[in-house]
Length: 83
Ligand code: FES
Image (cartoon, rainbow, N blue to C red; front, side):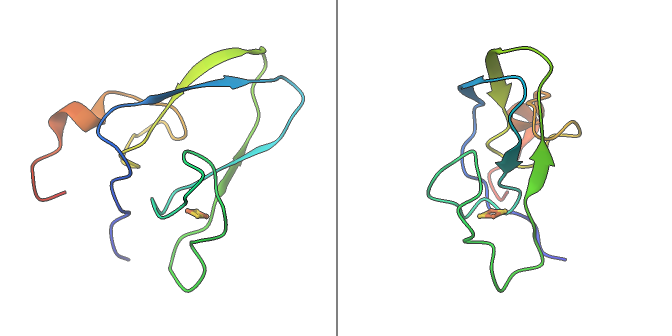
């Protein structure tokens, strides 16, 4: 499996609402980051469905390498220039 594209090297703040299902882009190709726009077609990636318990602002991963997707875990700060 290839690595996802780095869509950004900092998390993105997104206001999410409890009760909704969101589809996080795991491939990095979406033009609606951080959410899926189906640009993953013809790749090995698929979106990650998730929901939140509280309606508030969350910091979602844009480097697509967090160990806690869709949420940022600080991995972007450790990416080398080749990622
Ligand atoms: S566009 Fe990236 S997972 Fe769908």
